[in-house]
Length: 165
Image (cartoon, rainbow, N blue to C red; front, side):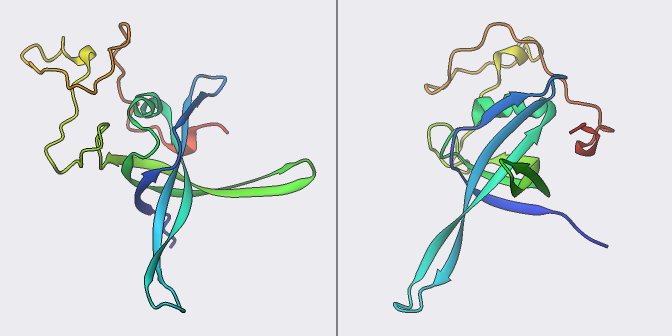
């Protein structure tokens, strides 16, 4: 039996990059910095050493996440490792990345910690569905995009392994 499960928390190292395949599948790439603590042999002090982890999100969650993630955002990620190898200019290359299954925001857009009363604003597109919902827009909220269709989650029987590439 083998288990392929990864859980990390850290800060985004760059703004996420959203792309789409020719058949329309959305793909979101971003990097997360995760610190490792080691004792310095000369000074005896504990020091942080960063590890940089590439992450990828597939499907319907990619575009909405791209709107809320930005460089420096603190996130908790649960997913699985995926190894890729290819050849470019006669050299073999490879990488190990995390395919994200679940992502939690640990900080808000204005830098406030999630545990300090941050509550994500409801998108305008859901205001019609939740007619009784009344909320004032926070100062950091961007203007609402022009009438986007409401996205529904993919069926539960679709897995990352079903994506053809």
